[in-house]
Image 1: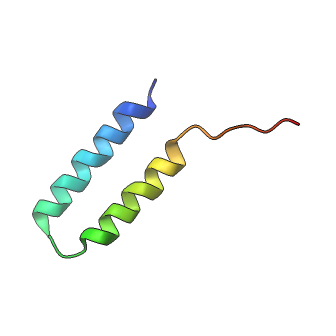
Image 2: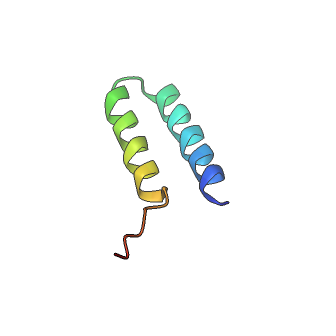
Length: 47
């Protein structure tokens, strides 16, 4: 159950970055999506 807290931490980091500089918003969002994809449990195909 460590995935949700990690995502929350990343979101807080991104929100802080947005406050620091509100220029590259789309880039920040893509970074978040990539991080979430990395941390999300991947389906293991053992066929």
